Amino acid sequence: MTVAEAIRPGGGVTAATGATSGVAGRVDVRERVVRKVSEQIASQVIGVDADRVKVAASDYRDGVAVRIDTPMPVPPLDDTAAVHAAGAVIDTVREMQRRVQEQLAQVLGKPVTRVDITVSGATTPVKRRVR
Image (cartoon, rainbow, N blue to C red; front, side, top):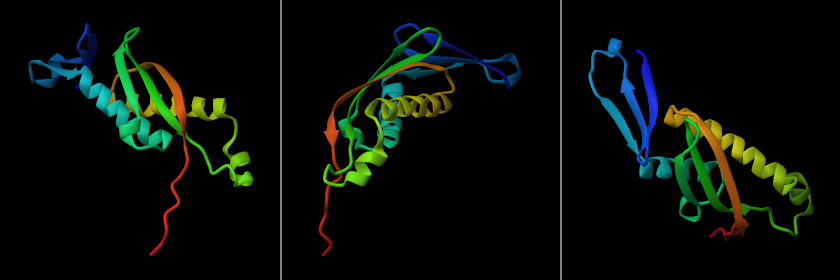
């Protein structure tokens, strides 16, 4: 089955089915769906709660572009070994960009041509008492 996909201006991903599928019509994926899927993938990749991640999605160069605004998880600063193991912030964020781009493209079935991540703060793991 062949699928020809195009971005519908102002509306999100549109997929038109090929003649060999036997089903006439098209599939529209609204921008809000792309945004919600992007939020979930970004929160899993980055390691923060989905409600702390803000995503904007738009059409960009025959694909989808996403802008992510999120806090970055950091290890407790009194754990020097964990701080050194975490690496540089820039390298960590670039790896997050790559993983978000790959996973989102796989889920959407459409190229993700741009991923912008803005780190808006830091979050540390919460220490919980065992009862």
